[in-house]
Length: 175
Ligand code: AMP
Image (cartoon, rainbow, N blue to C red; front, side):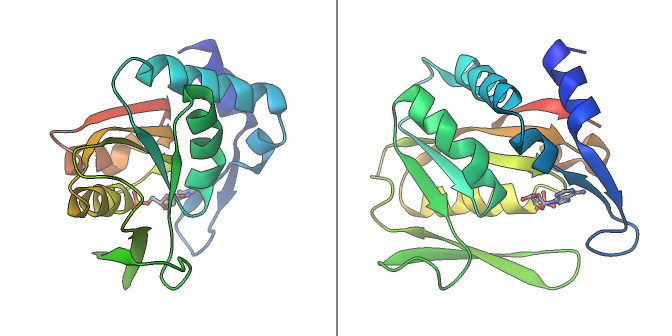
């Protein structure tokens, strides 16, 4: 285990039965409270993706914003927010996807990425992979391509990586 992974594991807070019974929620707020850890996460992602022709970082509302924006700044490229429905003011594309109960939707502005551009998708955590796959579909609706995915936390037992088969997937902490 890398030292960053070990320190993240000792800093993340497990909250049982949130937001509903049976879910062990990985609370990232203690990580956000550490400027040093946030800097190391950004450096770790930047080292992984620098030089791989990434044109923009796409982050999903809302915890993807917290890790995607500093990474985009470190790489010197645009950040693109994938937002929940009704939040983006301009022309947009939408993608709905199934959750354990019900469904969710994410949206991108139509001018967020140009056809042929390459996007890196960043979120705090991959569980089933549904959110990440929906974001890839949004990127692809704009004619852009997904270079890969970066997650701070991977819940490997939920097999989300298999849902993203064919894409490059990088995570820092695995359970
Ligand atoms: P999924 O679409 O199943 O991969 O779920 C990923 C999204 O749900 C991410 O944006 C996470 O922030 C959130 N999420 C799912 N499970 C957890 C968990 N156990 N702890 C914290 N966040 C979670």
